[in-house]
Length: 154
Image (tube, rainbow, N blue to C red; front, side, top):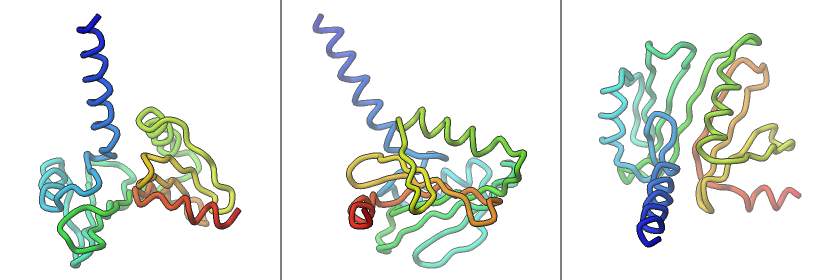
């Protein structure tokens, strides 16, 4: 019985660690240099940089428009990141990504005010999934959990 409980606790701990990482193995507060190495080792190419963000592209990933990794506080740590895909009405990318996010983070909720799906990672962070007005660009934004703002609107 003790062995089962130990395995169960270790499994839950590992699952918690995995849930903190997002698409392309990026995590909040991860070192920006480490993220750069992981991305470039996986075929990403840096296309733009300033002191607060780095933009990447990967020619091996169809329809990937860009990946932006931000260090808003200029501490050398990831504060947020966004992934954008060019899509059309026939694209299967949006459904596949929603399924992947559901598997990783559980149930999302739809915010009709902002026309986006939201996954709460924890009390501090969330994932925002939305389309541009023309519905031809899908954005997945990993950022702070701004639920206080949502509650103020209701």
